[in-house]
Length: 209
Image 1 (tube, rainbow, N blue to C red):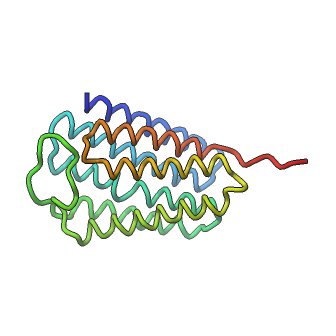
Image 2 (cartoon, helix red, strand yellow):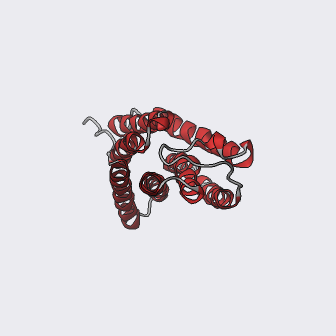
Image 3 (spheres, rainbow, N blue to C red):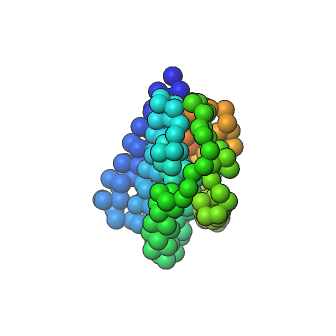
């Protein structure tokens, strides 16, 4: 059951990422590409949860989960918000950061054994530098960018930005409660992905005549 719920969450996040990608192909808005990449990374993390729940956690599944969930989702989300606000420099910075994150996730030593169930804790398997420091900085900057941009433009997009803030809150709560297990965390992943997607595609408030 744990693996099925996590797999379902991965499908939800991946489906929403694909829809954002389709919208980007039609409109070529760079923020849509960043948001699609963010939800795709979220789907990868949920897929790793399903992998760990079904086959038991090991170094490979942990690396995939850490890359998608801890290193990429929030920073790419923040890059999308900055691009929406007209900060075009966010695009090349996000590309460089993504390459760095992938390299670290592949190369950093992973220590200690893994239990057969339950999402592994980063502090039990990774040194503080560089993987955990990069995750802390990336998540902090990315989340801050999302929150600041959403609050500054909430009068123009009240519903959309409220949904985005709710999605960020649900995702943060899910990360905080990751120790409960794959199924519980996957429910938060699916809910956060749905809220974020709804916020991304919501239109601005109609102007009064």
